[in-house]
Length: 316
Image 1 (cartoon, rainbow, N blue to C red):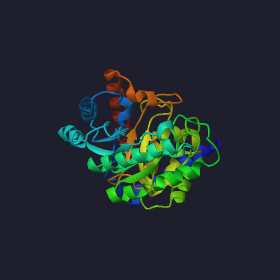
Image 2: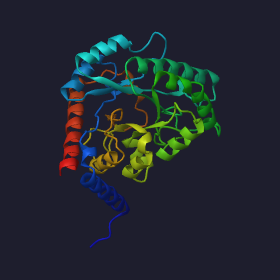
Image 3: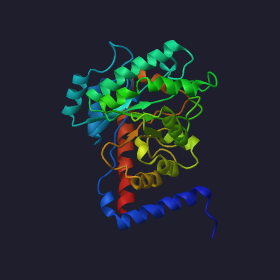
Image 4: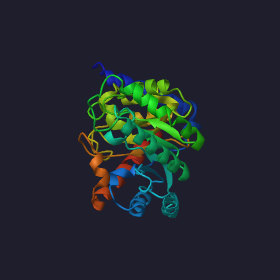
């Protein structure tokens, strides 16, 4: 018999732990994982059209584009709630968007102030629409080269300026590690935990994982999920090619088992597909005109495949 590969050994540990949970505590598997969707990849499509697509695919939650780039820009809370309630969809959270112009770690004071102002607007909006979290990126996406050796410290200092706002609005700050091809620091779950410890504030305690980045930065996705534990509040999902789930070689079954092992099927935790396609900087998709037929297929394939594999894991 061939010796198992290293990742297979880790897979087996997770599977064994899951089967033990399934046998001893079956009640912990009764509630299914909360499936959401990150809508900023839908570009400038009207929210109502996006919500119709998600509702048709049986998706009950949405992660909204954090588009409050100024006082006059972005979603209006009452309009959002009206549109979503008509489709029986709730807001999971808000995807904070951090580029060079609002970089928490920037060596420009103007950019850091823009980040502070942006977060104040975004946190307040998230609370107004019932969002559980705001996704945070410690350094600008699309800037893989470091400014200098002090960007981590500047980022921590800047986020601390608004950390109280998260507590006041009962919204979680979810730190997202991103691959080194897109950001200059905070690439792994361990890095995110280190960043959280440095901020040292009760409003900044959670993590937003992303399977595409985790495939490139973590030694094993399932083990990284276990490492994140109860800090994990949202998990962006895409297959190995950053396309629809089921379109690549991602071991979805093992990561579903890992999620159930950390009790991720509890309220307030979400699996949120964000299949943006390959490339170094996906941000241009925010302001493009999408192909609605392509998006329909993307959402339906992802949702149906995820539920299929979840059923196989739980019932197989």
